[in-house]
Length: 388
Image 1: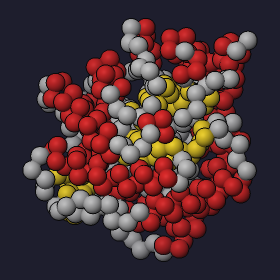
Image 2 (image 1 turned 60 degrees about the vertical axis):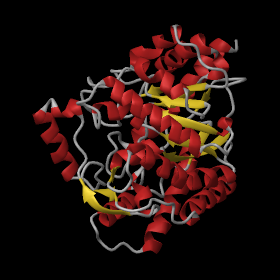
Image 3 (image 1 turned 90 degrees about the vertical axis):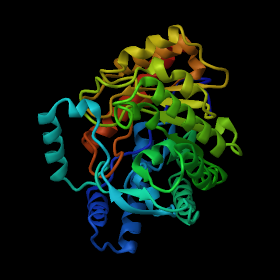
Image 4 (image 1 turned 60 degrees about the horizontal axis):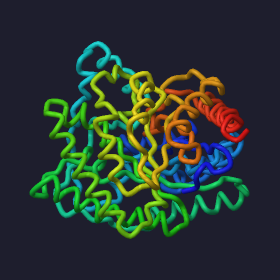
């Protein structure tokens, strides 16, 4: 990963808005309707070309494919792993359960959208979990590389995302392996194929790890904090195992508390999980730092030292509101971290994605691109302070 050596670099958390027609096709497929593979492939490639052009226009330094050829940051792996079948419904988040009227409105709003459901209709592990075929992820890499060449993109670096073993374990109910540790180990070995394919294709790898924060108020909402932290340590062991053949400087990770508009007053504090997060191999750490439940946590780094070789990618744009952050505010947010951990160790990012799964997006696509332009402008303003 490039450091911010001459100016403050910018990036985002991975998912970006999908065009309406591509969203419609993914939603139809998720409902079990027949969708011609050729049509979905053509729309996906067209969306990829558009999203690369929009990132160039916005001024993003470290860019990706916007996850255009996937229906979700994590649900897509159901088609790439063996041993899965059946369905189950994931429990609702603790903060949402606290407000039943809000919960019902959320479900009603989701029911009226072309969307993929990340709560209901999830799958189970009923046999040995293996990665079936590296072909689909290799094709994603090839399509992205072709698009970058055609666009003559000026990006500093490029990345592709993949979910952590812990995140997959959260949406796939284990009915086969004797323990959670064994299940995580199997997922790590399986997902390693995807991780190493992305790296061998010349891209950075971003591991999406919302499980390291979100599962506290989901799976572990009724259990002691210590149980959740033990889970986090098991996930880190699985991540480090899966990344054993990959240089740590080629990997970054994204941690968040769930990309949904909600109370979030049951979120685990960053201070409780920061040591676990820093124990993971990836050198870059992307995390939410703009939303109202976590915007204050920059002060944690007044007392927590950034480990050698680590970079921070704080979210300086909120991912669930249509407010366009002022560039001066963006510069202030980036500057707080740069003053505490060193200007070269900070890259400006977003709290989470803007299309985490199909139909989820809370922010209008046009507003998303304006937000990213504000991010780039804010980074330029901050750079003038740190490189006068």
